Image 1 (cartoon, one colour):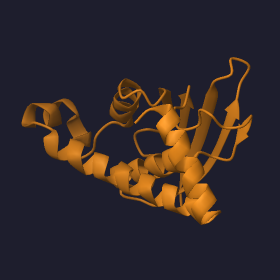
Image 2: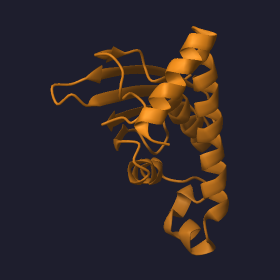
Image 3: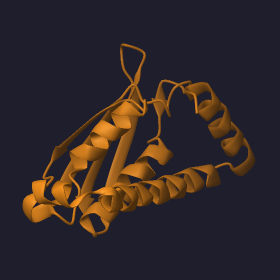
Image 4: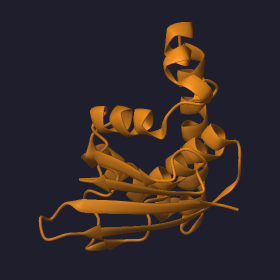
Length: 150
């Protein structure tokens, strides 16, 4: 879906559901993120699992960073404690889901949900998440998500 189509869909949802649109988008994202983990885990070959060593039952969060970047959602970077997931920082530059928004966007609920769904499924633990999206000097949106285990 193009950024223009997503922007139109998002605006229509907010017009129809008001603040409920944020909850719908967040839940859609969480579901999608969880399903990504399940799908990619099932697709791992035995050779792939061996290359992960002790983390054979879990994908590396950087796998999702590369995948999301390749899909055109934006340029994703992930840092923090990726081994245990105690604290994870996700940054998405040129976020396709925020294009067409005003200067400040309150957290990009769909991408926030995707990040939460991936983390919760990947680490099999609940997370707190803080998000912010800003329009930087380059006129491109950057969304930042800080996740920590509950």
